[in-house]
Amino acid sequence: MARLNDDAQWIVLMGFIVSFALFFLAIVISQSTVVGQTTAEAVLEFPKNDIVNVRSEVFSASALSSDNLTRVKNDISSLSLSRKNAIVSFRISEAPLGSPYNKTIEIHYNNGVTAYDETTSH
Amino acid sequence: MVNTDGQLFTIEGVAAGLIMLMTAYIIVGTTSLYTPGDSHISDMQLEQMGTDALRMMNIPNSSATSGESTLQKVIKNNDTSQFSQTFLSFANKRTGGIDDNLQFSADYYYRNNLANSVNRIHFTESRIPTGGEHAMRVTQWVQVDNSAGTMPAGVDTRVQAVLVEVLVWRD
Image (cartoon, rainbow over all chains, first blue to last red; front, side, top):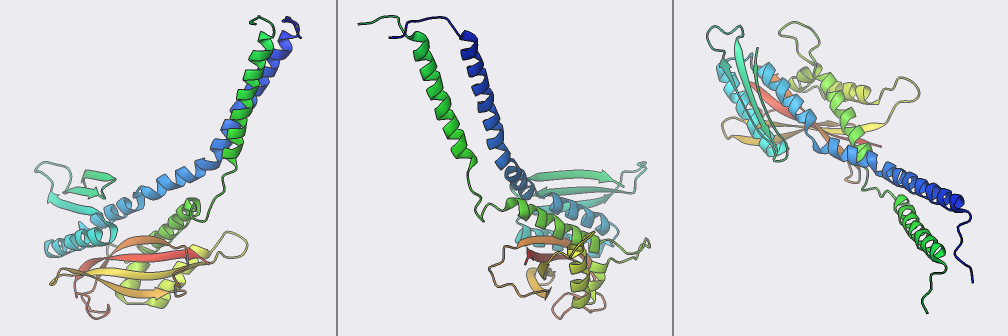
């Protein structure tokens, strides 16, 4: 029967250190296989392109006459709701007197997960 | 009989057992296979590519205030072949080597002002989808002036915003 002796403690300690190092490297490798997928899921879920697109459409609509603007506004709201499952509304008003800008534009976007509100003057 | 022999061996044995268990757990975890459903990475690239192609088409061709984009002209004049040609060229050209082979099917949606209804017009496609494709939907808002009535019958003759929806897939 082996007796308790204190030889070779350094070898045992080094063995522990090396095995724990391998263990943490294995964790890093196992994470690397899923990182691209979670990033892609997050990118797909976030409606970046929708918001950018609605925004540019609202800005180009701000040059329309008031009749056309009302109709285009309804177009954007109805089509967003039925095709993109998003509530989109915007308002274009004259900037307050004395302001260096001509118009104030307010945009509201909400698709149930992501909400975006903006007030801009131009 | 309890004695104090072999404590170091016992501790070492327990530690080695734990290390082996954890290593086995991680090794099993690293070998998970990607099924076709886990294709988010290529989906993301496809969506970005299609959106970029449509956005490029929707940039005005001149700096004049009346300058229309290719996409506006194409929708307004119902010019399906021009759409097909431009979209495929934007989506498939590479800086070198052979072209990519993306295919598309394009619709657009408009609102009827009187009935306040949303209607679809099938625009054009490069290949008729069979339903088996793994397609991504990309969209673009387009503001068109249909005062001249050049769009298909049923579309209001007025300035309006239509939503162009394109299904894109890699063949």
